Amino acid sequence: MSTKKEAYLCLSAMLRAREPKLLNGEKAQRMLDAASFAEAAKLLTDCGYEDMSQLDAAGVNAALNEHRNGILYELDSLVPEEGLVDIFRLKYDYHNAKTIVKAEAMGQDAERLLSNSGRMAPKALLSEYNDEHYSSMPGKMGEAIADAKAILARTNNPQLADARLDKAYFAELVEHARKMNNAFLTEYVRLMIDSTNLKIAVRTLRMGRSIDSIRDALLDGGTDTDRILAAGDGEGLVNLFAHSKLEKAASVGAEALSGGSLTAFELECDNAVTAQLKAAKLMSYGPESVVAYVAAVENEITAVRMILTGFLDGIDSARTKERLRDTYA
Image (cartoon, rainbow, N blue to C red; front, side, top):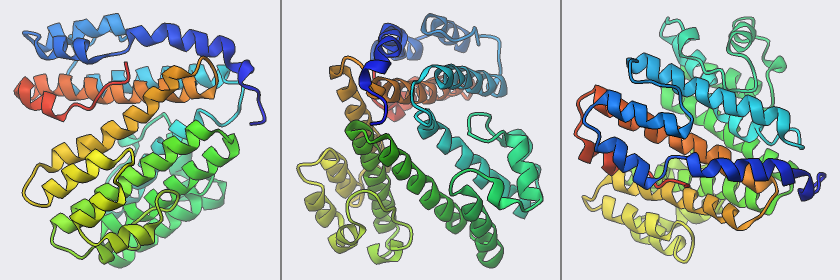
């Protein structure tokens, strides 16, 4: 690393002090047990959220996005290494790219659906896209967004367009991790890629298609894709990921191929990534604490959105609980 870990001493201490306020399993259960949406929302003020008890679904989504943005902007100004927070901004750049490409194809307005959490401001990205100034977009996004637009026009298949953008997104993740030269971050990105590839493989097999049909969709940067293709079926995937952090997920994936729950499988994939993040708790200070904290906030926001929208949509709390991922806290 170009920056010594000691440069993170104060920032790591600050984030460690904030960790007790994060949503944990006990707090999530209290929300699920609440008598109403308003009561559940008010419990979140103890976690540092604004009072969302009077908001509708759109208001909740906006408040959660603003909560995330505030944390990312704050950390941008505090991290001693440029580019570390971009690890998390990348996802929103590519969300915006997918949204813009598909909205244009459908003749819809994309602006209201764009996120402010990316590296590039939504309006600027939309303007550059409309003017076909792809070279001014950050990283690999310009080339990928031009390719995705052409793919969608040629095939009318949004999944293929999304796959092109996903490849660019994960390629940038790998590149950022390499530049950071941090073993924890490298392993985190590698596990994200393996988890995504395992999901792609299981979904494909569950649809009755050959695993070889996903050759172009698999992501580089994790377990060699030829080994995933060679696995061939659920049993092969179990053997491939045996003794790895995705061992349980692969086993539940094989069960999903025999009529088991696809939701339970995907939950195990996500939980494996969260378990990797928890290793950062053993490190007193360093970039690991930043990566783990921001990822924990991302997972927290996902859980909060799921619980609150569940109340608004009248979904039974037991069903919502089944879909919740493990928490970092």
